[in-house]
Length: 361
Image (tube, rainbow, N blue to C red):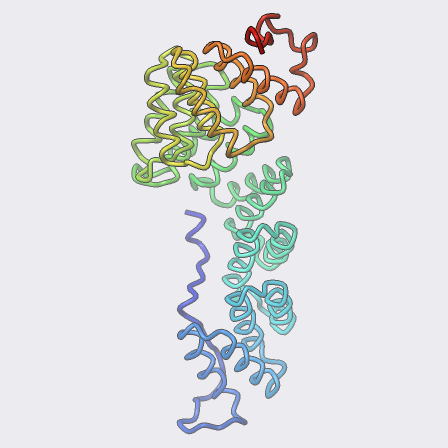
């Protein structure tokens, strides 16, 4: 698997230096600061570990490992830009910087996790210059470009990763995700099928792959096959991902199996109670089943979570109108129009009596 190619363990810090450290404290011995830094790092006392690195650099400013260790300490302190500078300094001092790849990989993933995508991209491109044959670097570069929504470039990065490691299911899966974003649905489906050739039965990647396959089949209007793929994703995923239930529910709606769809959206809401999309779709199925009071409650929860969606107010209007709560229905519709003028009469035609106030009001 790609993610296992380069590892960084914050509880281990590899120090390289010449000679043996002295048993007694010697503030003029660079090895003393290496040892002290190692102890402090393992104790997660990163500020003090950083100070030890700085002391080592003052004593021996051309030692690559001092800057390497400094970059790790800075990362653990959340000072990622300074960590990048320290790592660049380490690379400039080394004739063979391949041994710095774990630090580059960790740095890139940390920046990616902090949504600092441009900085992460620069790190991966620098690492690729050092080790162009390392597939994981191209994989993470693709992930970064995907986060930047530069899908064509992301696809090229995944293709390069696959040339170097053609049997990795994660690369095939992410390639499928990018192809889906590029609306190349049939190619995305082929990528998911290829990923499933190499994914292990109990691999989390297989669950994501089946979910992606389901999405592609759904877009191709092959709903029975899509449903089977989502069921497999849910079987494989031990955490019962809310998104998988949401996708299953949407597919069941297309198959007009509304009671089953209701259960799927109900489960999605339970697993992710902060998703407005889950609640509004749950409400939509309740409306289809003519359970309007419950539909209003579900849609109001969606509005509470995301009050800027015109469609939510429009659906609320429909449920209230079915309950003959016309004043509330009109208020909901007017809010939908304020948020999106396309819902205005004449632009988005509606039955004329939907907007009549109740008699006497």
